[in-house]
Length: 89
Image 1 (tube, one colour):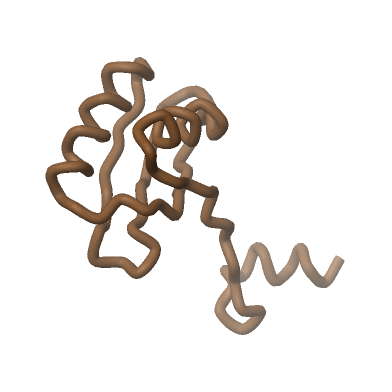
Image 2: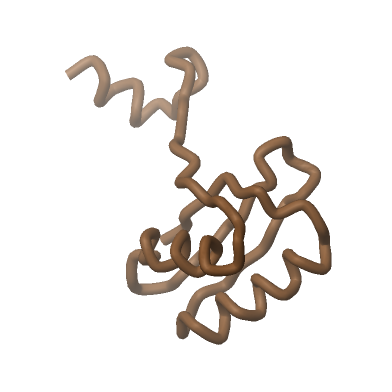
């Protein structure tokens, strides 16, 4: 399972600290930031279980950052064929 979050993290040093904290706090989570993206994206993957969004957001908020789930948005013409088929049904 992969979850993507929009954050207010600005600095690489902050991102490294948060990645370390996430990996320590949540067994099996793998985290990375893309600070060049306009949304300062945090990606978290976890094998075998869903990512606990509320806990991740709470952790970032406890350090003074904001985080929100970044929803998938597929323009109808660019959506994978399987999703286009589902939207027809």
